Every structure is written in structure tokens, then in C-alpha cells.
Image 1 (cartoon, rainbow, N blue to C red):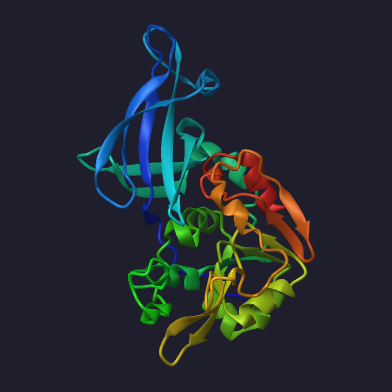
Image 2 (spheres, rainbow, N blue to C red):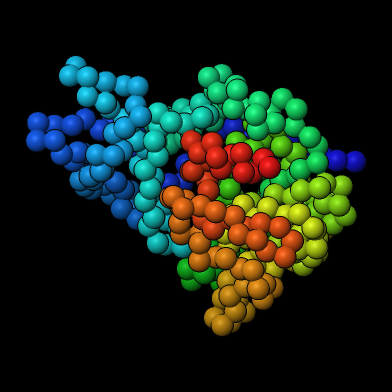
Length: 322
């Protein structure tokens, strides 16, 4: 029987530093804007200036008193493996209703994502109203666990010993960035079926019930799950760095343990499965300006990290639905 996840939450706790910016041309036609950006690893804030090219001020339905186009942007800074990556999102072009909760320091602390009635035609065209139950998305529950407190990344940072290489399997989905949180919510809103790593590991044949499998940032998977996914004939690998490290699940204790990968058990080990299609180098591209799907033996693989691009790129949403 096909199983649809009911665990998807719509409110996402934001790990990244995000600020909404409204670009207002000044008298000398420059686009310099003063914004606040927290420094990595602390709550310290610093004032920085960011400049956006004039081309970013096009296609806006907003104007100021002089009828000069104004466009709001969301600046996103993500720290991926300790490396800061920055992108700007065209807020007025979003095809989902995205609301931000902002604190007194004007920092965004949570994001609410929903469907926007203005884009009903788009949703219809990509199958919202007649979604065929032949595609399933695999939610990366093991990856969510690995990134948790006292988890794998505390071991990698040498702030915890090997005891942090065994972590509890979460009881519910909490869509964080590292576990494809935003994409999970958007695909759930668009009526895609979901299973989790646990479902696939316990019953690998479940994927055979679907013509198409969408893999998210399933960085940590078991050998059974890896085999089930790589042996399926039609997989869309939507995120780089998936299928990267091998874990073992113990359902009696409700835990997973890192077995191999991500520099473990020694620094010479990268991909824990020695997978020839590992594309982890692309995970740092959160802009996805030149996104494309590349063919692999059992499907297609995206060459960038699409979490933010999916807010507004209609072509990408169509490509995922095909």
C-alpha cells in the first residue's frame, strides 16, 4: 500500500541568517543598502553594505513616489560545512505565499510557506489538482537526525567523542535546511507522496510501487536504502550530496550509527558507498542560476542546491513534475 507522510510541518525554523531588503535607488543611482548580517558562530551583528546590480530592479509591480521600480529581495546566508554561501531571492516573484516572522532585531526567526491563490493556474499545470500517485519523495529523516544536537557534526567539529556517532531517530519530521526543509514543505503542498528513510530501509520494495522516486538531501542512508534507490529505474536526485555516508539503523534502540563516510573511519573516506555519481561539490551552489539535470545510470541529477530557487523558478517546478 502506498504511504503518504502526514508528518510534514508548515512552519520552518530558519537556520540561515535571512533579511528582507527593499532596494531604493538614491540620488546618485547607486543601489547600496545597509543591512545587518550575523557573524558565523555567534550572535554578534555587524553592519555591512551590499550592492545589487541595476538589472535586479526589473519586472517589479512596486513603485515609489517617482515611479521608479522597487523590488524586494531576501538575502540568505547559509553556512554549509562552515563555509558561508550568500544568495538573493526575488521576494516579489515568489510563487508560494511566504511569510516571515521577524524579531526586534529585524532578523527572521521562522518562515511560513503556503499556496498562493494567484498561482492556481501554475499549480494546475504542474499537477496539483490531478497529481498521479506514481511519484514518491523520500524524506531524509536520518539526515535530520545526524544534524541534531549532540549528533554527527559535533563529532566532526571535535566537540564530542564517538558517542555522538549514534543518534536517536526523530519521532517526527522537523524540516530543517540540511534535511531539505523548504523543499519538503513545497512538495508536500503540491500533493506529492512521501515516505521516509525508515520506510525504505524497513521495506525497500516500497519504491517499486512508484514509477518515479525523488531523492532530497538524503545524505545519510543505510545500505538497504542505497541499494533500493540506486536500483530503481527512474530516480530524480534533486539535491547534491545525497547518498554520501552509510549508517546502520537499530530499530530496537531507535538509533542510527555512522558506519562509513564523511571522513570516517579515517580522513581518506569521502563517499561511504564509493558511489561513482557522487556530486557533493555542487552543494555549495545555493543560487542555482545555471541549474540543469544531468543523466546518470538510473535517472537524472541536479547540479545545484535548489531549496531557495524553488520559491520562484517556475521552470524548475515544471522540470521536477515531468
